[in-house]
Image (tube, rainbow, N blue to C red; front, side, top):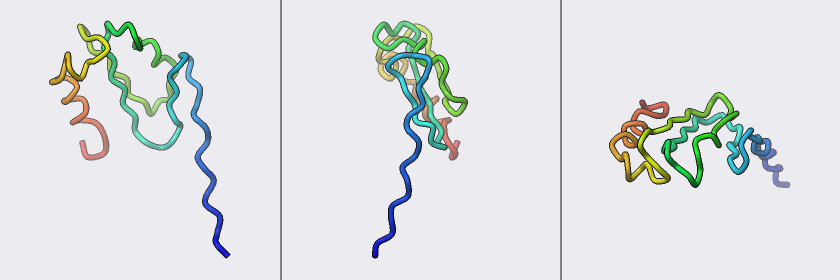
Amino acid sequence: MASEAPAPPSPAAPSASPGLRVHLALIAVQLIFGADDRIIPASHAAGLPGNVKVHVLPAAGHVPQMEKAGDVNKLIGSFGPAA
C-alpha cells in the first residue's frame, strides 16, 4: 500500500493589497518594483509577511529589469542564501 503524500502547505496568505498574494512558505522572497509603475504600484506590497524583501527603484516604471538593469541585477545577485 502506498503512503499518502504530505499535506500541501497552507494556502496563500492574503495581503492588505488587492491582487498580490505571497505564499507563507519558509522561503526567501524578493519583490522589485519601479516607483513610477502605474500597472502594479509598489503600494501593492503593503502588509506582506516579514520574509518578503521589497525594493522600490526610483525613476523606474513597470519594467525595472529593463529600465534599471544594473540595479536589478545587483539586487538579485545579493539575494538568497548564497549571497
